[in-house]
Length: 206
Image (cartoon, rainbow, N blue to C red; front, side):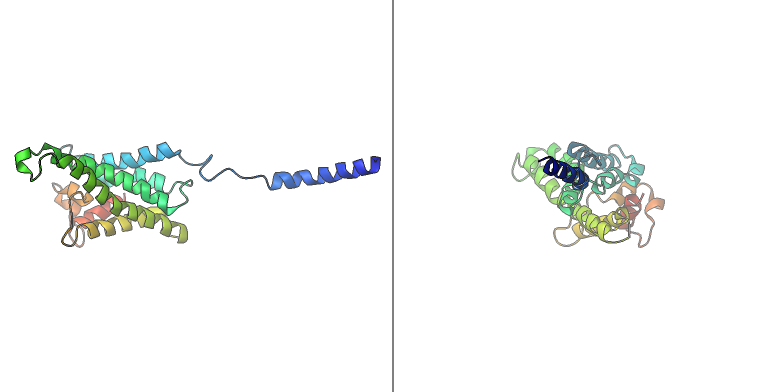
């Protein structure tokens, strides 16, 4: 019994390091990066900064840094899926368009086809336009994790791409391109090829 007890005790002693070695790590996102609510606030901050770059505030230089808070959360170590990056990009962009297109609510009932429709229309349009930039964030996140190119640079490129896509075609909607924030500063947007998309690139790459 003593030998068996000694043996079992020795075995238990030898097993202890193994227990520590295989101890479960913290779930993804715990202990690193921002909490979920914090990420949402940073994404919305990007939308607010982009809105302030346009009239009536007209603080155009803010367009140069508007995407920085969004980059902070999309490429946070806790954001391990492109789907989550999509949600953050969508949230920031939807918030931006809700603010930018607030003037729709100021239209008189006799100026619209269906009185009272502008409030739901505003939310629908903002949600729709947010999809483009959700895709830009998701694609940048995916590429950033699989290439040596920093995700922030990918976001600059994908942002310009989706900005061009949403402005093209029969249902194109060019409102809100970051380049238009510099409409009163032509020297800033005189970038090849001389379009507002070039201004978007300069704004998103700051």
